[in-house]
Length: 134
Image (cartoon, rainbow, N blue to C red; front, side, top):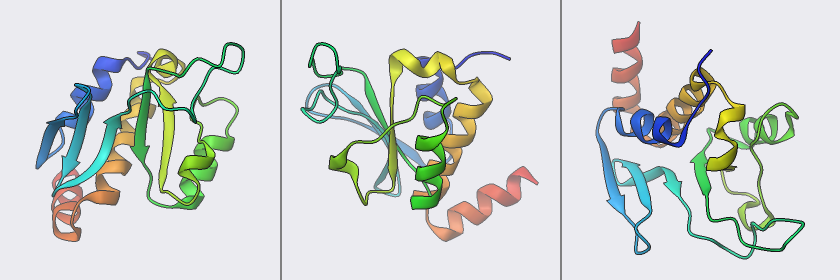
């Protein structure tokens, strides 16, 4: 099984229907559907730091999830690199470092990104997309 890469995030998120890509103030990419972000590359923040050095992670990707139950399942699975921080308590998203994407298969990453898109797309667009895959 091929391992996930940062380029896969761009290819998968950008390959979904009705997606626009916005460039943030720091040059970071933000993937949106219907004006709603579903994947974005986060700028270094004080809540996501290396526990050994206290340096801010420069490679954090935020991925929306359908609900808290999905978030909990991804974050609590010891075989997956997803995490969260108190800043994201109550927010339907998980975090993953680009440097740890290789711990996922491309198929696992595709599923998470597709779920993120579905959670943010309009009901009509989501239904059309799912019907096209049947």
